Image (cartoon, rainbow, N blue to C red; front, side, top):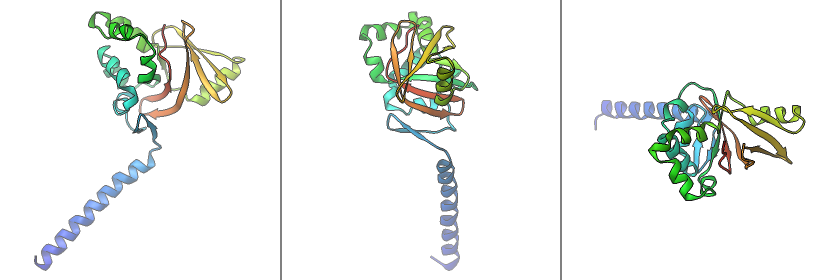
Length: 189
């Protein structure tokens, strides 16, 4: 290899480090949260992040079956209470299978949109609403019915219309179009 070739190769190596360094620096600027073994990036939307979580494969499948992918990739903002696979496993298998059938798409959409608030609400904002409400706060979902929020010790909980209680296990997973709060129980309207 002649001297000019060596300089050209050295220049390309230096450029590749510069570009990869910029990409790494960009990722370092983002405050990620680990969910289901994957980093959730605030620059990605709700669906892009959820698809990377091994704890939310059932939720992602349900969102796809309900034709809500495009909606949840939209501008929002949305606050999503995202049940884990373990939360779905608490339901009878026949109930989940039934909801995923094409003929029950509108029912599935109702269940999923019951997990979504219009707007972006951090856990701090929900805590403040609970405090202002004397220990409880009701918030209307995209589906139309309300969820009731309350606290116990340092934990934030949500109760659905059927009196099911879900604990927020991971709060404030910021997204480009809102925020996700991971919950341990599926909410039912």
